[in-house]
Amino acid sequence: MSEHYKQSQAEQKLDIIDLNDLEEQAAKVIPVGGFGYIAGGSEDEWTLRENTVAFDRRNIIPRVLTGVENPSLDTSIFGIPLKLPIIMAPCAAQGLAHARGETATAEGVAAAGTLMAQSTYSSASIADTAAAAKGSPQFFQIYLSKDWKFNEYLMDEAKRAGCKAIIATADSTLGGYREADLRNNFQFPLPMANLQAFSGGNGQGKSISEIYAAAAQRITTADIRRIAEYSGLPVIVKGIQCAEDAERAIGAGASGIYVSNHGGRQLNGGPASFEVLPDVARAVNGKVPVIFDSGIRRGSHVFKALACGADLVAVGRPVVYALALGGAQGATSVFEQLKKELSIVMQLAGTQTVSDIRGAKLVSSYPGEN
Ligand SMILES: Cc1cc2nc3c(=O)[nH]c(=O)nc-3n(C[C@H](O)[C@H](O)[C@H](O)COP(=O)(O)O)c2cc1C
Image (cartoon, rainbow, N blue to C red; front, side):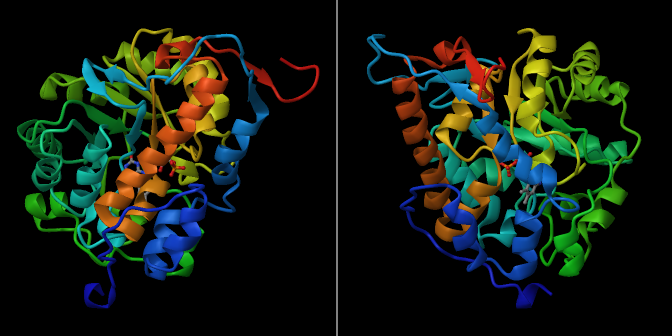
């Protein structure tokens, strides 16, 4: 199948006006099976659509006479300085979007001054992706295998490559019901480097459901503790959608909570990720940092997520589309665009710094409700 899969080789800065435009443009560049896998959600994609629509239900109050000028987007996580509170979400198989895959993304994300999360199911290896970032910070996202030898191998590689935290994704003990993949009979046309290096069973020719089926289904809080103890790195649990699970994860030694519904790719019919964020953030209560993703397409969405308790937000699909359209420079363009939009929102909302955003109060967009 791989010889028929035509990968983009584009390398250019993108002139972005609205991140939402990228999807249609990328559909012209990415082969149909790969595009369906990247763009799709589960079932009829209600949750996928809700993820972005939900931001419209909370409003930002414009503030005046605040003396704000040139807002600063600088922030940090675990003591790692970042130029903006926006990072790259872990996304599998980026070779589907570009011949250089994650190595181009890593380079582009580093140029934007922020952090890349590598997926277990990357097209490129942990070491090659880390090398492309030339010392810029990276996290490693683990999909637990039933085979702890593989889990340990991944964590060893991540540590050797200098990754600064492990993101343990807990919401994908099987694949969501993704209809685009079924209609396209999508099987990964390219190998996944981390699988290949360990077992030679590299994912090529497999569907996403087959790949998830080979991973662990019975994941519990004990696994979080085991990852933390083995790796010695901060562990961030990804896929948290309610206060109780956040508390259980922290109780098991999690050093970060990652609020996400996997971009609407897992449980369709669940709420927008943004809807559950305030509850989760209240439960976390500053004990550990909160990362948020799913549906972020605008600077105002970033602002609203931070105002509702996120410390950082992550972006998935728009960066993968931009990778297809412009390689490393394309990826950088997405972060620059969000930075531009967020700076405008910060100025008009009277917030000079990222911590000022956290103190901003949003109001309901429904009259009479707050
Ligand atoms: C093509 C693609 C591959 C993904 N692969 C992974 C993955 O390997 N591990 C993971 O934890 N999340 C994965 N996700 C979910 C993202 O980390 C993130 O939660 C989601 O993309 C955020 O929503 P957004 O695309 O609306 O920004 C993937 C998402 C996409 C679109």
